[in-house]
Amino acid sequence: MVSGTDRVEPAGRDAVLEATLAQHPGAFIGAVAANGLFVELPAELRERGLRPIEGPSSALGLALVEDHTTIVEAWHRLLAEGVANCRFQPRARPGHAARLHLIDVTHRHGVVVVVITGLADEVTVLDHEAIRPRLVTVRKDQVAVIIDADPQIHRVLGWTAQELAGRRSLDLVHPDDQQRAIAGWMDLLAAPSGEARRIRLRHLHRDGRIIWFEITNHSLLGDAEAPCVVAEMLDITDEMAAEEALRASEQLLRRLTEALPMSVVQIDAHRRVVYQNARGGRMIGTAAGGELGEAQLAAVVPGDRPMVDAALDRVLRDGEDADVEYGYRDPHQGLRRANAKVRALTTAEGQVAGAVICVADVTEDVRMREELQRRATYDELTGCRNRAATLTALSDALAEATRGTAVVFVDLNDFKLVNDRFGHAAGDRVLGHVAQALRAAVRDGDVVGRLGGDEFVVVCRDVPRLEHAGRIAASLGEALERAALDIAGEQLRPKASIGVAWTRAGGLDADALIAHADSKMYEAKRVTVPARRRR
Image (cartoon, rainbow, N blue to C red):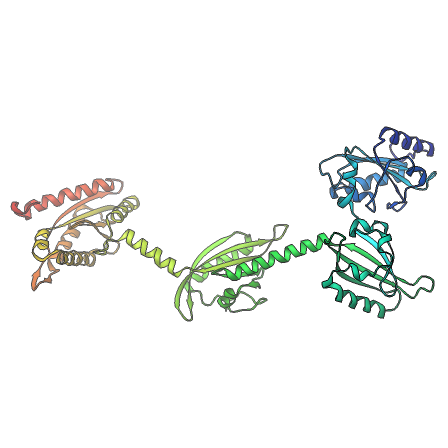
């Protein structure tokens, strides 16, 4: 092979051709005109017995798209040097390497010879559907009867050109498209000679398959010597299949969004509504093309509006997904809660093109969540914090303390006697009454908890000294003494033994502080309760 722009002499090109054919007796051979398109192989070369290349209109039709540039570059080398070759991947055998040889023998045969080597099963690789032409030409008369057709048409429709000659072209059209085909033909006949009309029609392959064509009918009926219509038929089956798949996908998504028990709204980068399901339309109250603006977000409760706006801005500006729960007012149901999942939509280049917003009413979920939280936090009988929540509150207070923290342990005296005399229902009333009295007497921020039975604990934050904790405990005892209640016609005044424990910031932990307060409570009980009543 020569390099640069030195062109191989005719004799040298003949020698390259002979050597290539001798070295690869099973190769494929074809002939290409100066425009790069395949033409009929000269008789002298056809008689050599090699397999002819059939099907594609050019060598590009043999290769994968990613190898087209390589083949074009080889063609340019051929024009400059007279011979060229390159490796490529056949369309029917991706990943398999073949070699394309281009040899200019126009001085002898009037064509460029194409030789393909390196294929183990060339017949199956180069034949059939993998290289069927996309464009074929058909000539018709004034009544749409086929005069002649492209020899390659059998690779597209299954009939040879000879079989189609004399047939009505309408017979090849899918029955559902025949009315459109007739209307299009009549429109062409009404147009001046020399004009063209384009139409997309389904045709039936010989084996019954549907082949889509985009047909450009050129009217040459005014030609005195050979009046006809030249139809350029472009196979668009793959494109139409892709369009149908896209249409089916869009329909599936739309039907899915209509079935979802939530509002779905798609907006563009400027908050204009691109799509919404029926629930979404009712929610925002605007049609497609309208803007998701002030009026559409007016139902959001004022306190949550900044959070909703910030979520939308973040998604449309930065492409970050956002989930936001907010309150809104329904004209029929009043205050409700909603959860919005906002997901960014981007272009192929990664630019934010808009967002899809899925909004679900979560009012009942929120109520259930809050109820579960309440049950996990509060004692059902007294409304105080339960044991676990009380210990958690104490641990938090100790961890966050900058001054001191106190625990007041309250144990009711003679509570068993109340249950024995008046019954457990009366005992429950006493516990609820005591809890209410304690909550009314504590400072803001203090936590009243029930550890179990008749034992209560008050967690007090920000208590500077033990003396202050003692005064808090005294005030709680006084509050209980004033908290009389009527049980079966008798006035009962709850009495309690109270223990106080205090620690500075960074001192005792929760368990130690509770244990210390419990110990102080028992010391007080030994003093205030006669020995016969001790538990």
